[in-house]
Image (tube, rainbow, N blue to C red; front, side):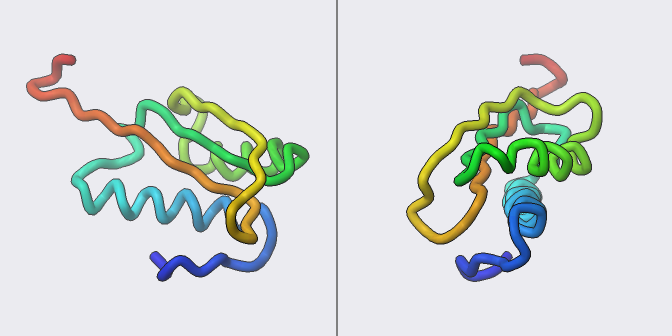
Length: 94
């Protein structure tokens, strides 16, 4: 992960970096994408939804977790922000 620096290259590059940062944080906590049950997405421009969705599908495949996606004015000069909730069942049960 970078130290809070925004990557250049537009929505595709920022989407990849945001998801890769999320994956790195998950791995540090002992989780993986298979443990993600919900993703929150904030887009600066709603017209970027389909482009973001294409990048998102590259990471989560055909059966992605629940997701909320909203338009939001960003506090910093970026195009996308993501967060997630991950869960691992103990002993294979909820």
